[in-house]
Length: 116
Image 1 (cartoon, rainbow, N blue to C red):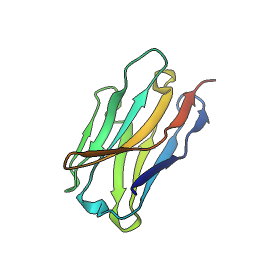
Image 2 (cartoon, one colour):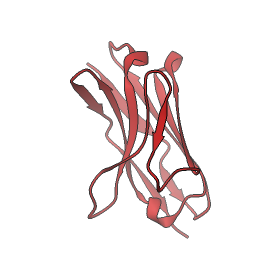
Image 3 (cartoon, rainbow, N blue to C red):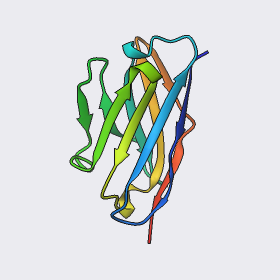
Image 4 (spheres, helix red, strand yellow):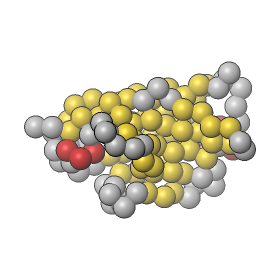
């Protein structure tokens, strides 16, 4: 059974930084997965924040370009999201996603709150 588990969320002041991590476990070939970080704020739809392909190509939402960086460590079955210059509007539940073929796997989510 494949499982994705996020960590690293919390409360941070505007302008601060957080690093989210998502570790995958189970019988998977992690390097073959496309990976993404999504977020959902109260009353809003879930949106894609950043993604990284199996080949390492990255894509970002316009709202986070230049501030967030997604990276993957295939040796540790982990994907990270480095978030800098955080803004109150970045407050949301952040979830990681692993996609391969027709299968999608989601973590349980981790809360990020940006507030003074």
